[in-house]
Image 1: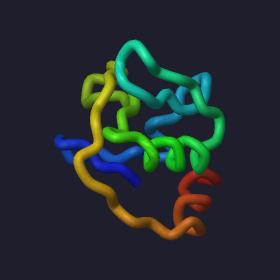
Image 2: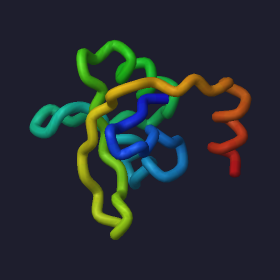
Image 3: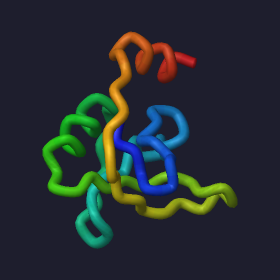
Length: 81
């Protein structure tokens, strides 16, 4: 999972909106319905960018500065709730 400078991660639950996941830099954003596809696309980007809610619930774009490895089974559990 990509991690932003503020420590937030591209989480499969909190980063999901009504269209799925919104990834890409401002002005070139794209919706992706599947979390694993979104992570794959983010991993190929020079700088992974995604929208996520901040502490006030406002959606903004953040850029990844590092990666945190998670097991696919763990991520599926997060998605399933």
